Image (cartoon, rainbow, N blue to C red; front, side, top):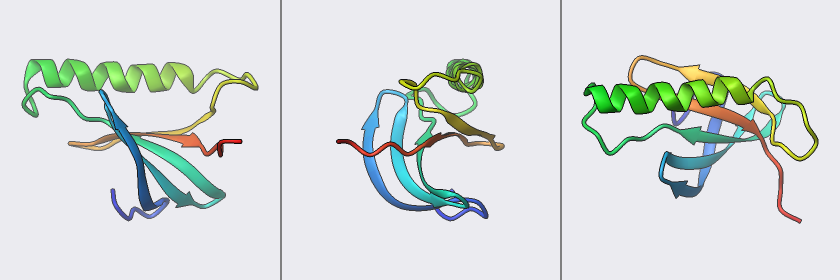
Length: 92
């Protein structure tokens, strides 16, 4: 997804247990994109479970609207990849 039609990743912000987070430019400005990653072999039952957990969590969070919670803008579920696009909130 380094350069998709909707988002252009410009830098990596960090990495965590569920995968790296990137800063990207989108149609409406800056966004944060979290990429799914699992330590299990791709396609294995554990990998599929981890991926589904990642996507389900993102979809559930996308319905939240609260000033102290980052908004989920998009959940991208591609064949072998999964991403969560969130609003960009710069640190004070």
